[in-house]
Figure 1 (spheres, rainbow, N blue to C red):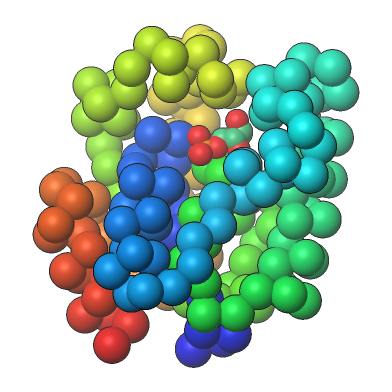
Figure 2: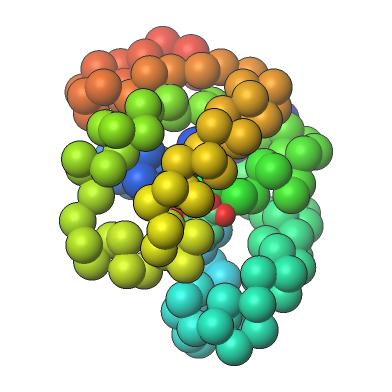
Length: 164
Ligand code: S3P
């Protein structure tokens, strides 16, 4: 396993951070969420970065984050932002990539208004759905494994089965 990291990818609201946090705890290892890492490095929210500097600047920060992870992080569960693999297709260099797949309608049902408000690319539902359709293929292509994230326990069990 490359650097021993487990990387969770998937669309906004697919449960990457929730699953990642629980998985790391169960594996008794570290957890990193790239959005949180960027917010920590920058001392401001993703929403603010998008508003003040635009998406391109955010993608540069994701790239920096990727290089930092590749050089410094081992044996860690990492959840990445929804666009991360799209802009960093060499993501596998940092670990085993697992795509957590959830249907768009289920994502909509699961996400609270607060969670939607934090995500600049989820403000227009029609556009978000189009983005989802475009990205599904990319997530598939760049993943070592694809898991339907239906329920937390089932998903954790499946991931553990893969990395054992
Ligand atoms: C984005 C997803 C977000 C965050 C940013 C852009 C995207 O992360 O990185 O708002 O391009 O899909 P989550 O997938 O954790 O919501």
